[in-house]
Amino acid sequence: MRFCKRPIVVDAHQLLPPDAIPPGVTVQSEAGRPERFFVKTLEGEMEAIPGDWIITGIANERYPCKDSIFKATYYAVDGDPLQACFATMRRDGNGLTDSQEKAVLAVVGA
Image 1 (cartoon, one colour):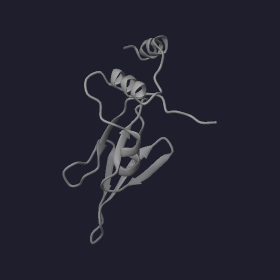
Image 2 (tube, one colour; image 1 turned 135 degrees about the vertical axis):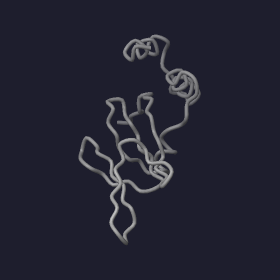
Image 3 (tube, helix red, strand yellow; image 1 turned 60 degrees about the vertical axis):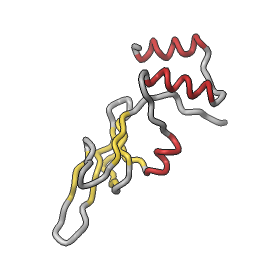
Image 4 (cartoon, one colour; image 1 turned 180 degrees about the vertical axis):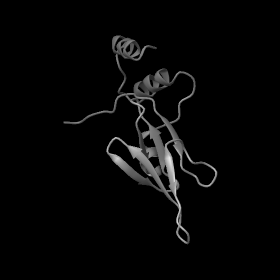
């Protein structure tokens, strides 16, 4: 079977120390060693490296994502994020019917 990811909008911030340490990231410093960065996830603590994206999902969970995977999976949205997702799905030939779009909007309260 094949699957398509649902049009879910997430918040994400790139880990770019020392200027950009996203919410939910803890920094571990030891003398003479490079800083290490950790994110508490639903599965436990995961290490992130500079350049990773820290994603906050729909259940407010956080997790790190490698830059290459993030860029292959997500795209920035302007304006109404759900409408942007719907438009991209239509453009890619995976569009929802009008009634499916309305159902999604009803579920998310938009």
